[in-house]
Image (tube, rainbow, N blue to C red; front, side):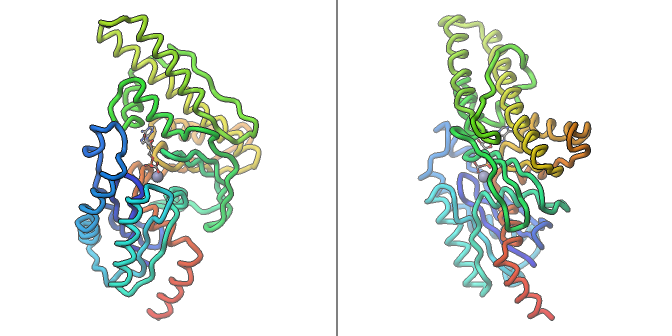
Length: 340
Ligand code: KG4
Ligand code: ZN
């Protein structure tokens, strides 16, 4: 079953063609980074206008890259929330219009279900598994018991992990987009240079990142005041790398500690990470190390990391989620019985 999927919930227009929820025939993204960089963050009005400009060429490019025509598509899917309303409206309405033109069903997809479904892309993973969803707006531990059944076991009480990365990057004077820039800088610094806290939460699988961010803010202000009005740039750059490294060490430790404890408590030996922060080099390395070394309680465990390009927002995951949705099964049945 071939699904044409659109994702436009934030600042990237993405269109993908996905077969049977796992095989990505094409996934084309139109990035808006250059538009938002001068503002240091995503400007919603500008994002919606950019989606409007790029959605048609991106659809065209995705169809051409997959070498399929609209008439070969079995259903059209689009993100319908959560996200920036002006941005969502573009992808969802264009998707609905395409479904009418093609005479094929339209499937609205929740963006977060999409991130969870990124685990299926180019992979043979099947539920049950534990998913650590870490994006710019959410940090959740999700127990995926079936393709269409999942429960949130814990989530952040304040900032999302990606938000903490972005805010910390901004505090340190790093350019937008903060998360990946901080990730790139961190290996250059001394991760033990600054002592930063890992939050303790009342409920065992919840997260909290606002205290960490506040500590970075306090300690960085102190560093700047010590260096004075005309700091030596190489000293400042070195300390910035040290702070990035210290933040990254603690942030990843906080994510991994909870995830490991949760997997052990529930005896779940397949653990996936998804969302923009799953693109983080230290988080990917930590999950792979856990898999390589095995677990003291679970014994062997499997770490699932979507290919890099399917961690940050993309339409392929929307196509995957649409396919594994129970409504789609009815449509698929219809498609296959027509073909028979
Ligand atoms: O899933 P996503 O693309 O959009 C949302 O649904 O929010 O996630 C974006 C978030 C941003 O906060 C971004 O800074 C973060 O993911 N991010 C990273 C990395 N790449 C993206 N954070 C840390 N390290 C990275 N390499
Ligand atoms: Zn996202």
